[in-house]
Length: 345
Image (cartoon, rainbow, N blue to C red; front, top):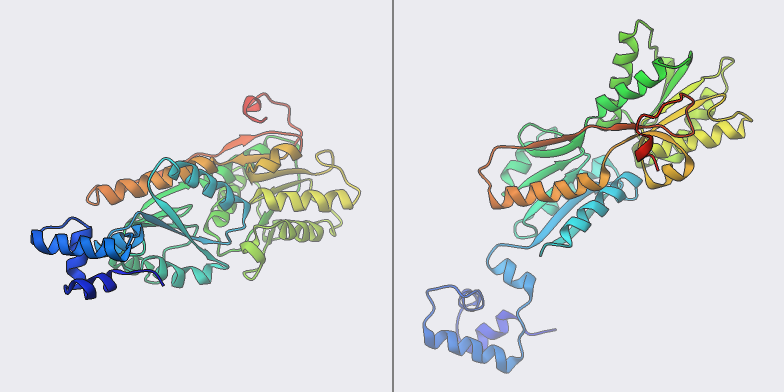
């Protein structure tokens, strides 16, 4: 094992706290004691480690991110924005990956352990059942990403507005039997997208019935945001005598699974069934998927900025940043328009 401050303290005949004060240039250490500690450290070949110095002064230049379902495509894009922004700073990133939403809380507790990080980014998790108390007492700033709570800084997309835009698009065409591929009901973003779609559809005077929605199970992989869930949900819709003629999926990856199911059934997209997704993943551009674009890279970048602002100015008012999604029309829908075509490539 390497030399530690305990070894230096023992050799120099001083306390560990004194060694810590010397390495962190703190006062209340005599010149003679300081010189002794530095001489012993040099004799032992000790090199102060950055994290050790941080722990000694109860500060750190590490940011923790608690992320459910980290292999989800959306989180990968947001993380890229976060890491690109952090590359210009002195901060490091520590990621806690939660397989399910149920695993978020214990990992959040680990991330907020004293001295582990300067602040925490909590991704796509509802703040409920006392979590807000846990977060407030943790002593570290917390920024919510893709979520909202009035007491904490947050950054998100207006999911209801995205669902509204999808419904408005469908209502403006000759679609008669639209359906929705919904992720897990526990997912706040997916629930908001469905609610935006439903309320806009009903406001047009049409009836929105439960059989228009395929809901992923709570145990579904990636909370239902998966190609498999989109595929299986679409397969069930295609068993009906009156097949749907349009699909709104609450994520691009579900829409891609739906596209596969439609084509396996011998039908064409968009001639027989139009498909709209949500996210605008890089792969969606290559597949020609019409979708609601949310600025994932910008969300990651802005999340870091919000957290640093909170670390540096803890008494500033709580800030909420909400991005508006934009409809990107491509080849999986039929309506002819020039709206947003300049940004679709």
